[in-house]
Image: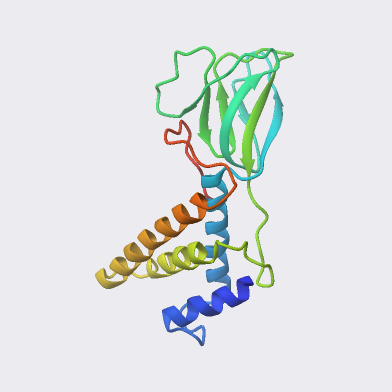
Length: 194
């Protein structure tokens, strides 16, 4: 199934085949948001990036990261990742995830690099790209949920909630039947979707 075919299916469910209320670019944006969500949940295509640190420089910007998985330094020391909630302020080896593109290093050292395992932002699809087999229902339900969030009335809210629960079920089913790595039950960092 192509993205264009999926959008046509979404339009049938929305009863908006003439693109009166939802245009293709809006639905495609929801599709790509779902693609980022699925990549983050599954920890797809992890990479390791190297960030050199310097004395007296605590904040480092990192572009293109969807989820941080783990970190160690070039001396082989594991560095724990923490959300920016104050819990790690006094832990000398802590790396604090301040936002999707900014890390705070409690004890930076010149000549020591951080080796960060992370998930990058996936490349955005266009209308002619093919959806990975088994993900069609996840994309359908996610997009329907996001489309129904457009209005603030109770009926639309209920529809959005219904399709969100359907999305979660479809995503769990596809993860269960996938060879990809799964999310751990306890996560120390958030995913950021932009």
